[in-house]
Image 1 (cartoon, rainbow, N blue to C red):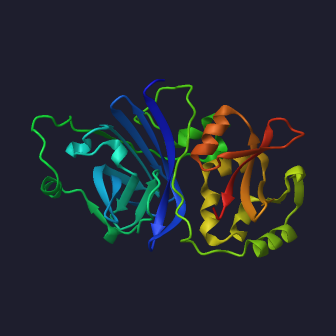
Image 2: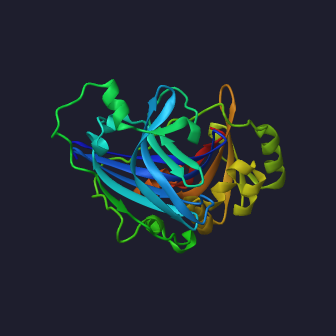
Length: 321
């Protein structure tokens, strides 16, 4: 559809200024001068509370946010929806293109963030964040004529409970992030794309060669992609605990659970590349458009087809990327 842009971006938690695990995703749809934003958080390890939701931009090395509203958290999950105009957002002088991502600040000081524009590394902490202040902007910019402010954004809060992944068919997976009051997006033939800025070199590095030795010693090994130099260790859901602790959250990923309950196994794979080895976690499945969309949304954007099985293969994501 002409004049329309859609993308999905992942949201991560931040602990002690460091990027931690994936905690959800946001869907953004822009058509004409209107933007529709959905945010879905899962497994945020707090029973209840609230998060302030901001669009943020870099401001002289700090993070400046424009508030879009408040999201309630219950039983470790939260859902939020808002519709707003892309120019002069919340009566500010800013356009949607001025912002770099989404910043969520919890009542307890916890931070969740997604950044879809490339830029200089940011320190992510409550002390490095401030809300946009109108008086500050008036002092720094030439005042515009009054009477041209856009209509205020209309906020729609949505709350819902997740259902167990093993009770869903592939086409039903979105049901755990949908309800009768959620903002519904019209179906289009456009591709769904995912964009985010990896924040590198801030995580502790692990000895993956040693971890890999332990995996292949304790689990069945196969080479379904031997022509590509790929070796796979077949694991069960509980075996994710053999990975470093920062990856244990993957055991709660809805798409991964769905694949495991259908096929009763997962794989950890090693790819030998020219200069280094890389490891990935794979979820067995069939390549279908609906399955592809769900794989992207839940963080498994790549697909490796087994040569003998036509459309069967593994949706995967790299580890330590």
